[in-house]
Image 1 (cartoon, rainbow, N blue to C red):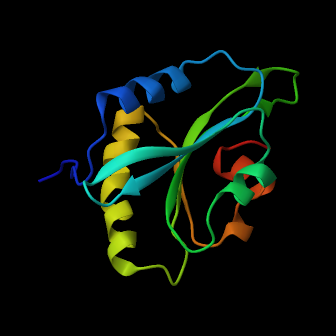
Image 2 (image 1 turned 90 degrees about the vertical axis):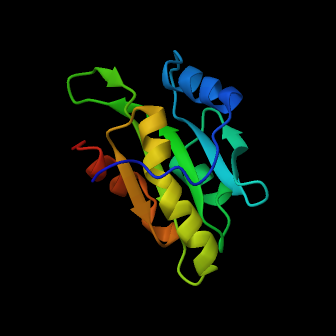
Image 3 (image 1 turned 180 degrees about the vertical axis):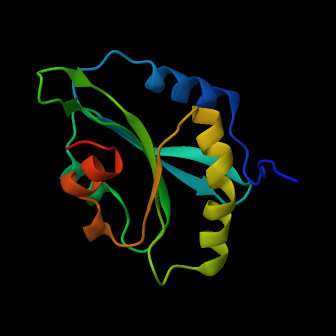
Length: 141
């Protein structure tokens, strides 16, 4: 039996925001940082980053709490083309509350499905989140 566990609610308003983000016409890297509100269990936008780089994204993530980061990454190809692959980064730091960690882990697949993504990454330490890491995971040389 396969399926997507729906632990947290994704409001229609947030679904619309995620859809707009996915199809935006941008010329830079952008990100949306999402957090789970525990009561009621709802997914919320914590911060929107426009024209950001990976260092800014890393600095916006809390040190001891899990988060989701939806990233539209500006990728320059060797032949001069520019594309904007999207990915979801699930940040789950070591030492955080196991109950909260499970809440995020159990919600990830539903969020990936809702965003229509094929790339989703996990990091446990903020130092892992670098340009090289992201480029490697997105298949960029």
